[in-house]
Amino acid sequence: MRLKQWGVVLIGATTLLLTACTVVDLDENGRPIMPADPNAKPSFDNLTPEQIAQQTWQTHVIDPAHKNALDASALEEQLKSSSGTANSVFVQLNTPIDAVDVSNARDKNLTVTINGKPVIIHLGPVIRGNAIRDAAGFKFDDFTNQVQFARLSKAYNRYTVKQLPKVDDSWTGKPTSVLFAVTLSGGELKDAAALELKQEAQ
Image 1 (cartoon, rainbow, N blue to C red):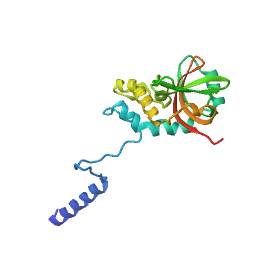
Image 2 (image 1 turned 30 degrees about the horizontal axis):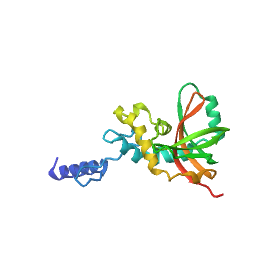
Image 3 (image 1 turned 90 degrees about the vertical axis):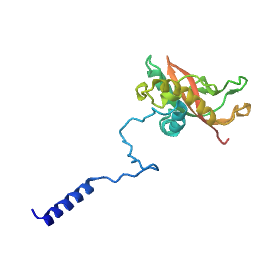
Image 4 (image 1 turned 180 degrees about the vertical axis):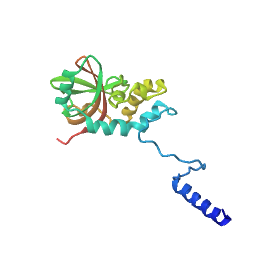
């Protein structure tokens, strides 16, 4: 094969090789930025529970809560059909506030009536339970670091307190939009944690 022919072959092979390659952007250090696999599980390996809570608050908590929240009647059906296994859900209500209790500096809360029964919704600063984390759909095997999973509940509970407005006795009797997470267990509502509170126009 002549030299000219070899040159044509090499140019053709190079063109094919370049055509098959995907151009990848580089970061500030010159390393390739690989696009995320949309089917891959989220990786939280190098994040603290507080960072996970902050980064996933809108996408894993607030957006799904607004989209999938149960109203009072759907909540009642869930309670009736719930098995012995605890299950956490998001709930959205437009309801008057029956009572506000801010006497305990560590456990402020408000009370609303749902299907004829009083339900206490916790405002913090200390909120107990796993309602927010579990309603958001996180599972034990989503984490290679199981300490993160265990501590994510506390991180979410602390984070939601920072998002809530100041609630005092003036809220009593006022119609309010209440978005919260709650655990259904044994036919009862437990560990209800407020996510959003907004007074409605009277």
